[in-house]
Image 1 (cartoon, rainbow, N blue to C red):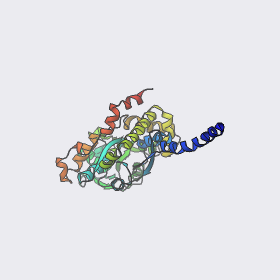
Image 2: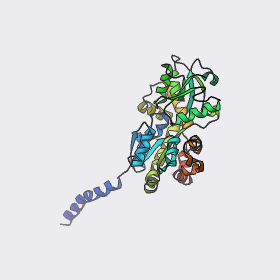
Image 3: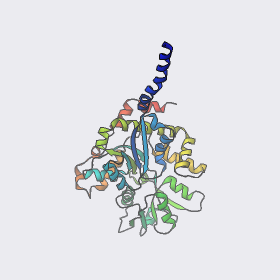
Image 4: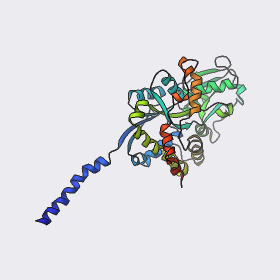
Length: 337
């Protein structure tokens, strides 16, 4: 009789333990939007493919929302929890009362100011057409900063027009089609379209060459989400930061991600250039919010948003999640071999 009772107990135990095990393995959901398919999104995809989100207890859904204004609207509506957008859009929205805050970064975009091959220097741009993505976008403000530095006034010395094209590789094609004479493009995209020599562009310089801050792709949330889902956001940035570390250490892993998600051809030169430009140079190992980019956006928008006269970087940035991870030694552990 005793043996029968023991057997029944052992038969029941797995059924009792199963719900508890399922509860233990339950993952917290998080929706993250990104605005373009570029190399600085690599950590998102690395974390997805290596199961890092699950490692830190998350079920992360990555969604591509091309327009920054749409992604910020989705964020405010509660349809996404994190967005990647230029600081100009975030500053403009927050200054007008939107409870949006920048908490991390995808890094500075590796932009180059490029033009027709016949344009050899910035002075040659007089009377030419320069194309941004859209009015008020990061590329628009960046081009205005660069043009001011080289003494060219939009509407007087050059025509600065919104192309409506957010992807830099497609804007580069507008140059070859004769629709614009110059634009801003990500360096790996410039390399991709000119590699082999069939198409040629003149590289006039990088933002730093003109003494201006490069816009980045900042990671943003709402103050409510930061307060109510803080442990979930912290887990995300643990997965994200580990993905950065793994991508920087493992070149072949980065190549695999670029081929899969960016559809890059199996071209060693292109893959290596993208790896160095994005994972090694653009994306920081510690993804602190980029205060210089936010400050530049404040200065860009002060002429149109009066409230910005009395606002500072700290009104738009909350680095507490990254600071917490840093103080806990999380980044130091990631750097170990």
